[in-house]
Amino acid sequence: METTSRAVAQTPAAEGGQQAPSARRTVDGYLRAPFPWYGLDEAFTGPRWLMQVGMTADGAVEHGSIGHGDEPSVRNEHAAGGDQETKEKFAVVVTVAANPSRRTADGTGLLEATSVSSAAWLAGVGLLSFTWPGQMDHALRDDWLEQQTETAWVLADDLDGSDWSGLSLPVDGVPTAFHYRESEFGWVLAGSTAAGAHVGAYGRGMSAYGLGFAVVKDIAAYA
Image (cartoon, helix red, strand yellow):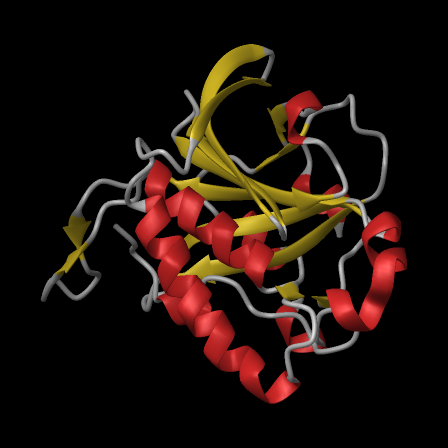
Protein backbone atom coordinates (compact mmCIF):
# COMPACT_ATOMS: atom_id res chain seq x y z
CA MET A 1 0.00 0.00 0.00
CA GLU A 2 2.70 2.48 0.94
CA THR A 3 5.70 3.61 -1.09
CA THR A 4 7.43 5.29 1.82
CA SER A 5 8.60 3.95 5.14
CA ARG A 6 6.02 4.18 7.91
CA ALA A 7 8.73 5.65 10.13
CA VAL A 8 9.11 8.78 7.98
CA ALA A 9 5.45 9.32 7.14
CA GLN A 10 4.92 11.94 9.82
CA THR A 11 7.36 13.31 12.37
CA PRO A 12 5.84 13.54 15.86
CA ALA A 13 5.74 16.95 17.44
CA ALA A 14 8.16 17.82 20.19
CA GLU A 15 6.72 16.83 23.54
CA GLY A 16 4.99 19.62 25.37
CA GLY A 17 5.18 22.17 22.57
CA GLN A 18 5.33 22.88 18.86
CA GLN A 19 6.98 20.63 16.34
CA ALA A 20 10.72 20.17 16.72
CA PRO A 21 12.68 22.33 14.24
CA SER A 22 13.88 19.21 12.41
CA ALA A 23 10.26 18.31 11.66
CA ARG A 24 9.65 21.54 9.79
CA ARG A 25 10.63 21.87 6.15
CA THR A 26 11.24 24.81 3.88
CA VAL A 27 9.18 25.28 0.74
CA ASP A 28 11.96 23.68 -1.36
CA GLY A 29 10.67 20.14 -0.94
CA TYR A 30 7.15 21.20 -1.90
CA LEU A 31 8.42 22.92 -5.04
CA ARG A 32 10.11 19.69 -6.16
CA ALA A 33 6.86 17.72 -6.17
CA PRO A 34 5.61 16.63 -9.63
CA PHE A 35 1.99 16.72 -8.44
CA PRO A 36 -0.34 19.53 -7.28
CA TRP A 37 -0.63 20.34 -3.57
CA TYR A 38 -4.03 20.60 -1.95
CA GLY A 39 -5.20 22.75 0.94
CA LEU A 40 -8.48 24.08 2.23
CA ASP A 41 -10.29 26.26 -0.28
CA GLU A 42 -10.79 30.03 -0.11
CA ALA A 43 -13.68 29.69 2.35
CA PHE A 44 -11.01 29.17 5.02
CA THR A 45 -9.46 32.54 5.88
CA GLY A 46 -7.23 31.58 8.82
CA PRO A 47 -3.48 30.89 9.02
CA ARG A 48 -1.86 28.35 6.69
CA TRP A 49 1.53 26.76 7.28
CA LEU A 50 3.83 24.15 5.79
CA MET A 51 4.64 20.98 7.70
CA GLN A 52 6.83 18.37 5.99
CA VAL A 53 7.25 16.33 2.84
CA GLY A 54 7.90 12.59 2.51
CA MET A 55 10.36 11.23 -0.04
CA THR A 56 11.43 7.89 -1.49
CA ALA A 57 14.97 6.63 -0.99
CA ASP A 58 15.99 8.21 -4.29
CA GLY A 59 14.71 11.64 -3.24
CA ALA A 60 11.40 11.79 -5.11
CA VAL A 61 8.69 13.72 -3.26
CA GLU A 62 5.67 11.49 -2.70
CA HIS A 63 3.52 13.24 -0.11
CA GLY A 64 3.37 16.24 2.18
CA SER A 65 1.19 18.12 4.64
CA ILE A 66 -0.17 21.66 4.89
CA GLY A 67 -1.67 22.94 8.12
CA HIS A 68 -4.59 25.31 8.64
CA GLY A 69 -5.62 27.13 11.79
CA ASP A 70 -3.78 26.81 15.11
CA GLU A 71 -0.45 25.00 14.96
CA PRO A 72 -1.11 22.04 17.26
CA SER A 73 1.05 20.91 20.14
CA VAL A 74 1.11 17.37 21.47
CA ARG A 75 -2.07 17.04 23.49
CA ASN A 76 -2.30 15.10 26.74
CA GLU A 77 -5.88 15.38 27.93
CA HIS A 78 -5.01 14.85 31.59
CA ALA A 79 -2.22 17.43 31.62
CA ALA A 80 -3.90 20.02 29.43
CA GLY A 81 -7.40 19.90 30.87
CA GLY A 82 -10.19 21.43 28.84
CA ASP A 83 -8.35 24.54 27.67
CA GLN A 84 -6.17 22.84 25.07
CA GLU A 85 -9.10 21.34 23.23
CA THR A 86 -10.94 24.64 22.99
CA LYS A 87 -7.85 26.65 21.97
CA GLU A 88 -6.52 24.38 19.25
CA LYS A 89 -8.62 24.33 16.11
CA PHE A 90 -6.78 22.95 13.13
CA ALA A 91 -7.05 20.89 9.96
CA VAL A 92 -4.10 19.36 8.14
CA VAL A 93 -4.39 18.41 4.47
CA VAL A 94 -2.15 15.60 3.22
CA THR A 95 -1.48 15.30 -0.52
CA VAL A 96 -0.20 11.96 -1.86
CA ALA A 97 1.02 11.45 -5.42
CA ALA A 98 -1.16 8.96 -7.29
CA ASN A 99 1.55 6.53 -8.40
CA PRO A 100 1.11 3.09 -9.93
CA SER A 101 3.39 0.22 -8.99
CA ARG A 102 6.78 1.00 -10.56
CA ARG A 103 10.47 0.17 -10.44
CA THR A 104 12.91 1.82 -8.07
CA ALA A 105 15.42 4.31 -9.50
CA ASP A 106 18.17 1.68 -9.65
CA GLY A 107 15.90 -0.82 -11.36
CA THR A 108 16.41 -3.51 -8.73
CA GLY A 109 12.94 -3.61 -7.21
CA LEU A 110 9.36 -2.41 -7.25
CA LEU A 111 7.69 0.35 -5.27
CA GLU A 112 4.13 -0.30 -4.17
CA ALA A 113 1.40 1.83 -5.67
CA THR A 114 -0.14 4.66 -3.69
CA SER A 115 -3.90 4.74 -3.16
CA VAL A 116 -6.64 6.37 -1.13
CA SER A 117 -5.57 4.01 1.66
CA SER A 118 -2.13 5.63 1.59
CA ALA A 119 -3.70 9.04 2.23
CA ALA A 120 -5.95 7.61 4.95
CA TRP A 121 -3.01 6.04 6.77
CA LEU A 122 -0.84 9.15 6.58
CA ALA A 123 -3.71 11.26 7.90
CA GLY A 124 -4.38 8.81 10.73
CA VAL A 125 -0.74 8.76 11.81
CA GLY A 126 -0.58 12.54 11.52
CA LEU A 127 -3.43 12.95 14.01
CA LEU A 128 -1.80 10.48 16.40
CA SER A 129 1.48 12.41 16.34
CA PHE A 130 -0.22 15.27 18.19
CA THR A 131 -2.06 13.18 20.77
CA TRP A 132 -1.70 10.71 23.59
CA PRO A 133 -4.30 9.57 26.15
CA GLY A 134 -4.88 11.28 29.46
CA GLN A 135 -2.89 10.05 32.45
CA MET A 136 -0.36 8.20 30.25
CA ASP A 137 3.26 8.51 31.30
CA HIS A 138 5.60 10.03 28.71
CA ALA A 139 7.74 6.89 28.86
CA LEU A 140 4.82 4.81 27.57
CA ARG A 141 3.89 7.10 24.70
CA ASP A 142 6.23 5.45 22.16
CA ASP A 143 4.65 2.05 22.77
CA TRP A 144 1.17 3.54 22.55
CA LEU A 145 2.05 5.38 19.33
CA GLU A 146 3.44 2.21 17.75
CA GLN A 147 0.29 0.27 18.59
CA GLN A 148 -2.01 3.02 17.32
CA THR A 149 0.04 3.37 14.14
CA GLU A 150 -0.53 -0.30 13.40
CA THR A 151 -4.25 0.20 14.07
CA ALA A 152 -4.32 3.15 11.66
CA TRP A 153 -2.64 0.94 9.06
CA VAL A 154 -5.29 -1.77 9.46
CA LEU A 155 -8.13 0.77 9.30
CA ALA A 156 -6.70 2.39 6.17
CA ASP A 157 -6.61 -1.00 4.46
CA ASP A 158 -10.35 -1.45 5.05
CA LEU A 159 -11.94 1.77 3.87
CA ASP A 160 -15.18 -0.04 3.10
CA GLY A 161 -15.41 -1.35 6.66
CA SER A 162 -17.80 -0.26 9.39
CA ASP A 163 -15.24 2.11 10.96
CA TRP A 164 -15.62 4.47 8.01
CA SER A 165 -18.57 6.42 6.70
CA GLY A 166 -19.10 8.31 3.46
CA LEU A 167 -18.80 12.08 3.19
CA SER A 168 -19.10 14.30 0.11
CA LEU A 169 -16.96 17.45 0.10
CA PRO A 170 -16.01 19.85 -2.71
CA VAL A 171 -12.60 19.52 -4.36
CA ASP A 172 -11.96 22.47 -6.69
CA GLY A 173 -15.70 23.04 -6.52
CA VAL A 174 -16.66 19.50 -7.58
CA PRO A 175 -18.46 17.23 -5.06
CA THR A 176 -16.08 14.40 -4.24
CA ALA A 177 -16.56 11.22 -2.21
CA PHE A 178 -14.42 10.78 0.90
CA HIS A 179 -14.03 8.07 3.52
CA TYR A 180 -14.47 9.58 7.00
CA ARG A 181 -14.07 8.46 10.59
CA GLU A 182 -14.01 10.08 14.01
CA SER A 183 -12.24 9.11 17.23
CA GLU A 184 -11.71 10.63 20.65
CA PHE A 185 -8.61 12.33 19.25
CA GLY A 186 -10.19 14.03 16.22
CA TRP A 187 -11.27 13.09 12.70
CA VAL A 188 -9.64 11.63 9.60
CA LEU A 189 -10.80 11.53 5.99
CA ALA A 190 -9.39 10.48 2.61
CA GLY A 191 -10.36 10.55 -1.06
CA SER A 192 -8.98 10.96 -4.59
CA THR A 193 -8.89 13.92 -6.96
CA ALA A 194 -9.14 14.24 -10.71
CA ALA A 195 -5.71 15.91 -10.82
CA GLY A 196 -3.56 12.86 -10.15
CA ALA A 197 -3.37 12.96 -6.37
CA HIS A 198 -4.97 11.44 -3.30
CA VAL A 199 -6.04 13.74 -0.47
CA GLY A 200 -6.19 12.93 3.21
CA ALA A 201 -6.99 15.26 6.07
CA TYR A 202 -7.15 15.23 9.85
CA GLY A 203 -8.15 17.76 12.43
CA ARG A 204 -9.48 18.70 15.81
CA GLY A 205 -11.77 21.52 16.91
CA MET A 206 -12.84 22.23 13.30
CA SER A 207 -15.75 20.33 11.80
CA ALA A 208 -14.88 18.31 8.72
CA TYR A 209 -18.40 18.65 7.38
CA GLY A 210 -17.99 22.24 6.26
CA LEU A 211 -14.59 21.90 4.62
CA GLY A 212 -13.67 22.19 0.96
CA PHE A 213 -10.37 21.50 -0.80
CA ALA A 214 -8.58 23.20 -3.67
CA VAL A 215 -5.26 23.09 -5.48
CA VAL A 216 -2.76 25.48 -3.90
CA LYS A 217 -2.02 28.10 -6.57
CA ASP A 218 1.23 29.37 -5.03
CA ILE A 219 2.83 27.03 -2.50
CA ALA A 220 5.72 29.48 -2.00
CA ALA A 221 3.26 31.89 -0.37
CA TYR A 222 2.87 29.43 2.52
CA ALA A 223 6.54 29.67 3.54
